[in-house]
Amino acid sequence: MSILRRWDITPEELTELVEQNPSLRGILLGYIAEGKLRKMWLARPEFTHLVKYDNHDRTRKGDLVVTYKGHDFVVESKSLQTNTVVRVGDQWRARAQCDASDRRTITLPDRSRVTTTCLLVGEFDLLAVNCFAFEEKWRFVFAKNSDLPRSTYAKYSPKQRRYLLASLVTVSWPPVPPFRDEPFSLLDELVQERGAATQRRKR
Image (cartoon, rainbow, N blue to C red):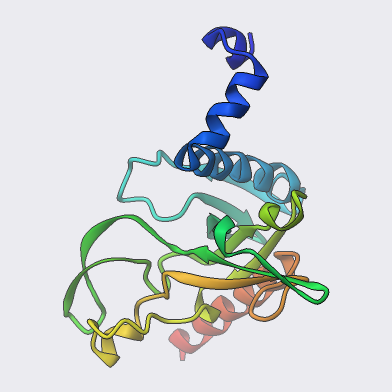
């Protein structure tokens, strides 16, 4: 039985509710995008394992964990802010909100503590942003965590900003660095980086 029959509402009624409630639209779009990400990209044979953790489990970072070439990678799924979408020539641009769902107090590598919604450098491996808001087509862009911009918020010290990601990230279609239109070249780079780090530790 479909959710519409279970709730006894028509497609038109659901559409009206979504259009009238931006927060509901954002929630639904976020979960739909995560499902599309899994179906379009993460269900491919290059990935040997895929896990989605409970959203309420704060000990688990990221939306999804995939295994690629024997390595586990944490993937964070985000959406564009529809009210920031603009078209400049042949290019679409918008901002994606890349932060935690709530404020929490965290200890940074320099041992200072901050209360923030910012995500940490290294807290996940790969950012996936759906670009549906551009042309209502299901497309994704991907970037490595290490390539994302850092927070510039004056409340944090310069040293603290090194460890905190910016809460808003500019996204374009066609993508421009640090984003790419596929995840595999980025994951290959991450595999190489891990291998190099392992070799350094062995010396």
